[in-house]
Amino acid sequence: MTTQRTPAPSRTPAPERGLLGDVLGIRPASTLSRELFALVVNAAIVTVVILVLQPPVVPAVAISVVVGLWLVARLIWGFLSEGYRRTTGAGR
Image (cartoon, rainbow, N blue to C red; front, side, top):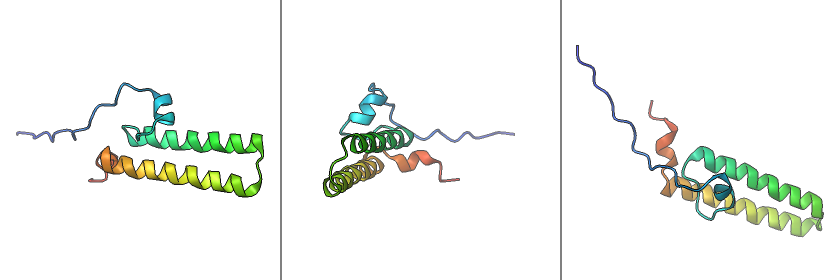
Protein backbone atom coordinates (compact mmCIF):
# COMPACT_ATOMS: atom_id res chain seq x y z
CA MET A 1 0.00 0.00 0.00
CA THR A 2 1.43 3.33 -1.03
CA THR A 3 0.60 6.57 0.68
CA GLN A 4 0.92 9.91 -0.96
CA ARG A 5 1.96 12.94 0.96
CA THR A 6 0.51 16.23 0.01
CA PRO A 7 3.10 18.97 -0.10
CA ALA A 8 2.93 21.60 2.60
CA PRO A 9 1.61 24.93 1.38
CA SER A 10 4.42 27.23 0.35
CA ARG A 11 4.68 30.05 2.82
CA THR A 12 7.19 32.80 2.95
CA PRO A 13 9.27 32.70 6.11
CA ALA A 14 8.62 35.36 8.70
CA PRO A 15 10.94 38.32 8.31
CA GLU A 16 13.54 39.02 10.94
CA ARG A 17 11.50 41.77 12.60
CA GLY A 18 9.91 41.15 15.97
CA LEU A 19 6.45 41.81 17.32
CA LEU A 20 7.30 45.45 18.00
CA GLY A 21 8.16 45.84 14.33
CA ASP A 22 4.81 44.28 13.43
CA VAL A 23 2.94 46.63 15.74
CA LEU A 24 4.73 49.79 14.64
CA GLY A 25 5.51 48.84 11.05
CA ILE A 26 3.97 50.28 7.91
CA ARG A 27 3.85 46.94 6.08
CA PRO A 28 1.54 44.17 7.26
CA ALA A 29 2.93 41.34 9.35
CA SER A 30 3.99 38.13 7.65
CA THR A 31 1.27 35.96 9.22
CA LEU A 32 -2.39 36.54 9.95
CA SER A 33 -2.01 35.85 13.67
CA ARG A 34 0.79 38.42 13.98
CA GLU A 35 -1.27 40.97 12.05
CA LEU A 36 -4.32 40.41 14.27
CA PHE A 37 -2.08 40.78 17.34
CA ALA A 38 -0.71 44.05 15.93
CA LEU A 39 -4.26 45.25 15.20
CA VAL A 40 -5.41 44.58 18.77
CA VAL A 41 -2.31 46.18 20.31
CA ASN A 42 -2.61 49.27 18.10
CA ALA A 43 -6.28 49.65 18.97
CA ALA A 44 -5.43 49.32 22.68
CA ILE A 45 -2.67 51.93 22.41
CA VAL A 46 -5.00 54.41 20.70
CA THR A 47 -7.69 53.76 23.32
CA VAL A 48 -5.26 54.33 26.20
CA VAL A 49 -3.89 57.52 24.64
CA ILE A 50 -7.39 58.88 24.09
CA LEU A 51 -8.43 57.99 27.66
CA VAL A 52 -5.31 59.60 29.13
CA LEU A 53 -5.37 62.77 27.02
CA GLN A 54 -9.17 63.13 27.01
CA PRO A 55 -9.42 65.29 23.89
CA PRO A 56 -12.76 66.75 22.77
CA VAL A 57 -15.15 64.19 21.30
CA VAL A 58 -14.89 65.19 17.64
CA PRO A 59 -11.07 64.96 17.39
CA ALA A 60 -11.09 61.71 19.40
CA VAL A 61 -13.62 60.16 17.02
CA ALA A 62 -11.73 61.48 13.99
CA ILE A 63 -8.44 60.03 15.21
CA SER A 64 -10.12 56.71 16.02
CA VAL A 65 -11.68 56.52 12.56
CA VAL A 66 -8.40 57.33 10.80
CA VAL A 67 -6.46 54.75 12.83
CA GLY A 68 -9.23 52.16 12.36
CA LEU A 69 -9.24 52.70 8.59
CA TRP A 70 -5.46 52.37 8.52
CA LEU A 71 -5.58 49.09 10.48
CA VAL A 72 -8.27 47.64 8.22
CA ALA A 73 -6.33 48.76 5.13
CA ARG A 74 -3.21 47.06 6.52
CA LEU A 75 -5.19 43.87 7.09
CA ILE A 76 -6.55 43.93 3.53
CA TRP A 77 -3.05 44.68 2.23
CA GLY A 78 -1.82 41.63 4.12
CA PHE A 79 -4.48 39.41 2.55
CA LEU A 80 -3.43 40.64 -0.89
CA SER A 81 0.36 40.69 -0.50
CA GLU A 82 1.18 38.15 2.21
CA GLY A 83 -1.38 35.50 1.26
CA TYR A 84 -3.18 35.22 4.61
CA ARG A 85 -6.02 33.37 2.90
CA ARG A 86 -3.71 30.52 1.91
CA THR A 87 -2.58 29.95 5.51
CA THR A 88 -6.00 29.67 7.15
CA GLY A 89 -6.52 26.03 6.15
CA ALA A 90 -9.99 26.71 4.76
CA GLY A 91 -9.49 24.17 1.98
CA ARG A 92 -10.49 21.17 4.07
